[in-house]
Image 1 (cartoon, rainbow, N blue to C red):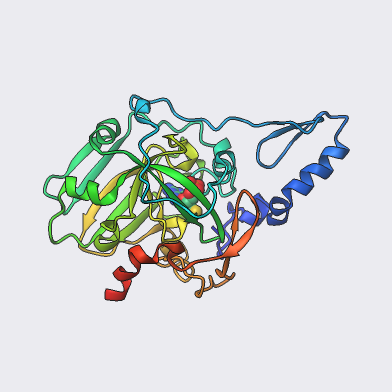
Image 2 (image 1 turned 60 degrees about the vertical axis):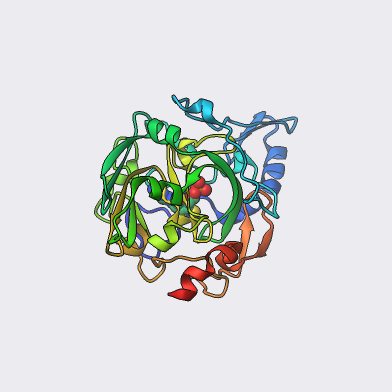
Amino acid sequence: MFIKKKKPWHIPESQATPEDMYLNRRQFVKKAGLYTLSAGVLFTGTGSLIDIFGKRKEEMIKVPETPTSNLYPAKKNEKYTLNRPLTDEKVAGKYNNFYEFSSGKSVWRNVDKMEVRPWTVEVTGLVEKPQVYDIDRLVKEMPLEERLYRLRCVEAWAMAVPWTGFSMAEFIKKVKPLSSAKYIRFQTFLNKDWAPQQKYKFWHPWPYNEGLSMAEATNELAFLATGIYGHELPKQHGAPIRLVVPWKYGFKSIKSIVKIEFTDKQPATFWNTVVPNEYDFLANVNPDVPHPRWSQATERIIDTDERVPTIKYNGYGKYVAGIYEKA
Ligand code: MTE
């Protein structure tokens, strides 16, 4: 996320992962490799070891082992496929936004302290029966499926990934909200020992939170993901459970959820509170509405560096445009 107001601790993404360096990574690695022959290996920005013979020794993407690991991979739902290739798993797992852990992209290096079990999700507010779900109970009770979705970050990069999880609509049916519920508020954990950036409370309104209207949350695309690439979510992707709303900018897809609250008021949300003139509540992908500081007309595919046109609603207009046309 690019942020206008600079605070003492904030490292803009341009410093954390220089865009030019990232975009030219392949050339950079090639050139640097030539000059570091005597050292034998080069540690690159993506965390790979390149040896002098040009072979890559990738560091593994760590996947948590849990009591429900045996449920993955889940059956693929053929309705949700893509007309673009899937992003390389190692690239997707090493280029993340998770501001609790880092304001750079190498979140995967900073998540080890986080514990994903035990984990509970509190369902509260305007529901028939507020309750606290143990994550393994929830995952066992819901029908897991795999869906291929695009993900478009507001920073104008994009990827395409196979999520595993269950539809938000199914979850809503299960927890039975009252008719007075108009919105859902989602909340991430608060734990300064795991997530060092949460110490800087003076600026960020931790914990991270997000919201959807009931019409959005019950749209068939809204998904609660517990897995990716045929296994459980690695921590950097938002283990053990996160939201995925592919027609909206990625910041709406809140990670590591601990609380889901049904409410009659539009909830305040994290980025909209921090920089209201740059990140709105709806945050629907739209090439015609530039961010105040950059264009949204095109997007960069993170594993190929290709630039492609942005599509309204991230290509999901046939599913979701009706929600907003009615409004
Ligand atoms: N959720 C939490 N709790 N904290 C975050 O910083 N970043 C968001 C979103 N969910 C974020 C979050 C942003 S800006 C994006 S683009 C996506 O997560 C990125 O998801 P990914 O890292 O799995 O690709």
